[in-house]
Length: 371
Ligand SMILES: CSC[C@@H](O)[C@@H](O)C(=O)COP(=O)(O)O
Image 1 (spheres, rainbow, N blue to C red):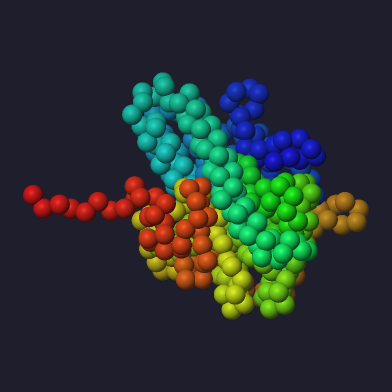
Image 2: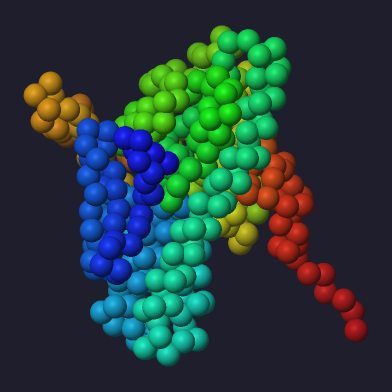
């Protein structure tokens, strides 16, 4: 998408042909800072410290992290060590595992001398695939926004509520949940976004608001607890969120607080959609509440907030009493029964085993035939 009018992705190979450029998202929205990653450890740190974040982007940066790791040592052992180190950076988003599995599958059969070039090629292809997937998700979900606009008799605006950041900053480009919003805006549908601030790290207030603003999409930042009130008063036409891992039966892990929005949406008859690139589907899991590992992060994300002073200085301040214990689960799981539909790059389906298999028939278990 565009920043100050110029097209930009969230991850790229620098002009030297090997180091990896990223936007350091910890500085947004106050400053657009880019970083050059040169080692595996820097790539792992970028993911762990959330300089890059968002399920699809984590996968893409991990793929480039493999490239950087193999530049130092392309042996079989190093490939395994590299993938293990990157895999352990963040546990919930399954795109990370998916991207590393793809890299391993491509690289293992090759001789060490061939691996670095092949790794860069595969990482670039994964990044390009992510862009294509997200564009397609947007095209499918655009119909949902267009229908809401028709239902309103083309009066006023379509109000969409989103949680966390599932925009282009969370992917290589376009975003998942925000892709249809950009496409609706570009096609002339008056769309307005309620942006949940998304405590504790404020991905909504800092990132979603910033990227929507860059693209000129009307939006309003709200505190996380306001969505239910807006829904009760008819001010939300639909919700669209992203996901970090979706099980084979359609349970959805996403940023902490998503579940409460889905409950409120159900209670108020507001459609609740999840934008879902296929690498985010974990076909090995069924019951998301029971089986999806939920990341617990540093308590300082809860005790402290950071922001910019009028002087321009960015500072961190404490909001809780010294000594009060805190809990910081990063994600929650929204059961499939609360999800109106899933939007994938192949189309829209019910949040159910059958729904997902109708779009991904190659995943249907092969029945054993008696001989
Ligand atoms: C396309 S993004 C979907 C999710 O990754 C997004 O909603 C989210 O929860 C991101 O969490 P984060 O902790 O910022 O990596």
